[in-house]
Image (cartoon, rainbow, N blue to C red):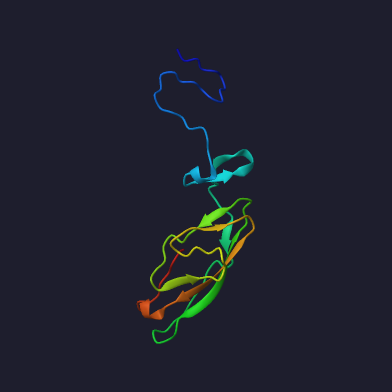
Length: 138
């Protein structure tokens, strides 16, 4: 018989056959969770992160015979915890370059600690652009 307490922290279900793993590590945090070291557990990530680019909008105007244009941008983590960032998608005409040692590239997440920044060069390759206007959200 299972005894259920009014506000149990752990509940013993004597009819279950699944084994519980009550030990969490930083590496065991699933996507959507972050590691909180002082309580040694994975917590849900906030819905809105305070991680932002230094510029809200960037505009390039390029002619097909021009060399690529480069613009600098900074990504800053204003949160009190570490975040990992990676572009959702990049078109073939845009590339990110960084001299920062911690930059993992566009195929792997880059970790930013609390208050850390990442400086990026955004380069547009006009030979890869179609004629007209292109809008992009990264």
